[in-house]
Amino acid sequence: MYEVHSYVKNQGLGFTIPYILDGKERNYVPDFIVKINLGKNELLNLIVEVTGERRRGKQAKVDTARNLWFQAVNNHGGFGWWAFIEISDPWDAQHTIQQFVKKLTTNRIVSRPGVCGGEPCIKQTRIPVSILVKYRRLGSSDDAELLSMYPSLTIDDLNSAWHYYESNKDEIDSLIATNEKT
Image: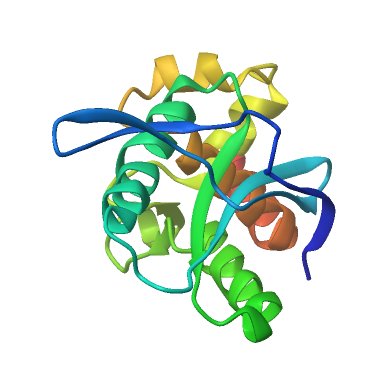
């Protein structure tokens, strides 16, 4: 399925995520940084937080990382694809991470009858994966260019489209061929 490309314990690296607790600026030091190979040289930078005892301020750190920091970094587009997972059972970490990555890489792509002929599209849009793949083949290999063409998309959407294509090449290639004939 997915393989760990590399990982590091974040202790002493200096990688922090700023957050605010009780009106004071603080720095959150996540436990691990894991690079996961999604195939075709596509890497996911996954911040892994192993949660034990719930201490004061823990939720503020986690919420900031999950809901603000990662969205900002991913929308920037210049630092790769990032995600965050909190693990409560370290003995089941491998399974938990695998399920998280699988969901992350596929839940942005949906097929709906009556929308774009039922083609797989980016969720909550009418933008088919096949169109994005076709633009990429025609020379729009820079994700920033595609994001400027489709401002409603995020880098996470594009990464999901590329991953979906790698997992469903025959389907998407067939759709592209059919669309070119019409």
